[in-house]
Amino acid sequence: MSKPSTPGFCLRLLRRQLVLAFRRPVEIGNPLLFFAVVVALFPLGLGPAPERLAEFAPGVLWIVALLASLLTCDGVFRSDFDDGSLEQLLLSPQPLYLSVLAYIGAHWLVTGCLLGLASPVFAVMLNLPVQAIGTLVAGLLLGTAVLSLLGCIGGALTVGLKRGGMLISLLILPLYTPVLIFGSAAVQAAVSGVPAMPYLAILGAMLSLGIALAPFAIAAALRISVDT
Amino acid sequence: MSVGEPLLAAQQLSLVRGERELFSGLTVDVAPGELWQIVGANGSGKTSLLRILAGLSRYGFEGAVTRACIPLYLGHDSAVKGLLTPRENLRWHVSGEGDYSASQIEAALSAVGLYGYEDLPSHTLSAGQHRRVNLARLHLSSSPLWLLDEPFTAIDKSGVSALERLMEQHVARGGAVVLTSHQALAVACPVRELALTAGIAQ
Image 1 (cartoon, chains in turn brown, red):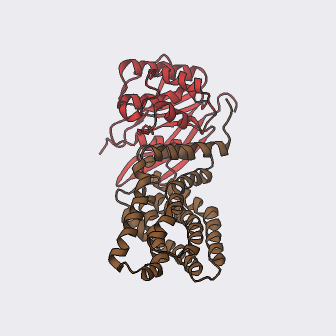
Image 2: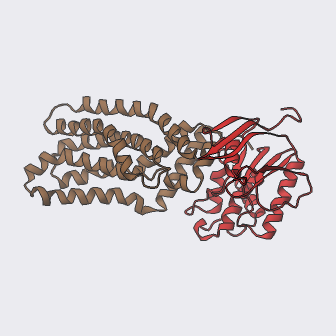
Image 3: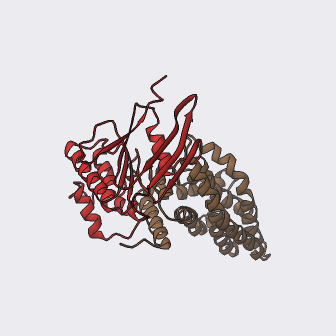
């Protein structure tokens, strides 16, 4: 028997999280369903005029993606906290920074990544001009990864509380706003034919910063939550 | 690590929860080949002490704990996921410590009486069987120090005696065990008692 390599351990953790998610398909379907329902309701509220829908589409799509991410980040660590798996993770001789990244990666794959890939359908429903769809997908893939990183900080801080849902919103929404601003600005730029790359680059910069720093915050928050 | 050097040393541990002092000035050295049983009434701080020894509690107590190795800690919660099978659960539980082959995992599961249950979803199993998935780690782990919180909970008589044999063997091999339990142990090796009595006094 040999000591397992750290990348191998993280891949196993990622695979475990994905297996757990796929055995409870409702959890994967919920954010997508939420996205679809809200997008389907907007034309009813705003009136079906195609120009008006196109005008609101960038903001609407981004706000819904943000809320979908917010709704799911509460549960990332919850079941592992409740059944003692988290204790075992904290005790295992593997760097917590990378384990946390595996958790976030799994969360992003089943929420943000799926939403990003499905977003062209919703964009068409809201009559978003075709030339902006590429930017929307790229922006959502980058931006939702940042949202997962930030959301998991809230999830880790509130995992020990019985009802942490509202508190997460208060903690995390202020951090979400820059992502929303630059994400929807990128789509708006693409709609009006202005280069969207600067906005996407800023989202990329946020993602790099998030990957570098958020796992430290999450690891510390998990240690505090388990230490009760 | 030389022979006789403690695997775990706790110095002057004090813990206050709310208004109550659960223990104070507690000093204990756990050397290889020793079996320690923490005894005390409900609420006397047994689990809190074990979590401090394991390193899960880092704040809120006074004193220092030094560990010569990474202990194997089995807590109240079995860490068994209902959606995973016992085989998948166990493979994940040990994956931080070592790369175990499929046959080693299988052997450990049959050693705790889960032969035939390896590939059923764990939510169909009983609480005692969840505990057994947990205890299967004892067959695989190479950690010399076991910290077991109420390991006999929910397991049947034959399971209890199998676990007692396992602890005997571990101690005979030069390992050490610290456990909390309310029941007397039927083991061949000497059992050192660590009594937490402050909680009862009030």
